[in-house]
Image 1 (cartoon, rainbow, N blue to C red):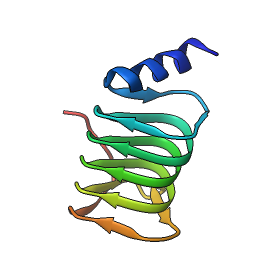
Image 2: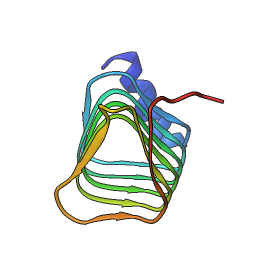
Image 3: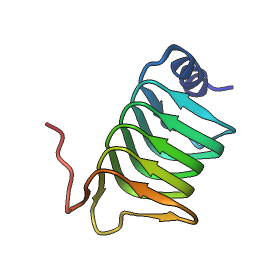
Length: 117
């Protein structure tokens, strides 16, 4: 197991920011911090986050439930999606695909580029 994956597993258990920078597959993710995906993440079961979700790359999830805002700069694919915050797509190549039920309680936004404040 690489150092990046070990750090990711510890981050999930200690409720820090989860940052994924490698191709990684996991059955289930539940975190109380923000989730930042840089690269590719594949989750076979469900992913539940009580912070923000930022996807830079691709993310495949069976069931997605996020309580914070979601930013996609790449692609997100899931079977069911429940977002209690806003959903922002960055760039013309960004998008998402939901096979089943889709609930977005916040605003749906589209931007040309993303600038960190």
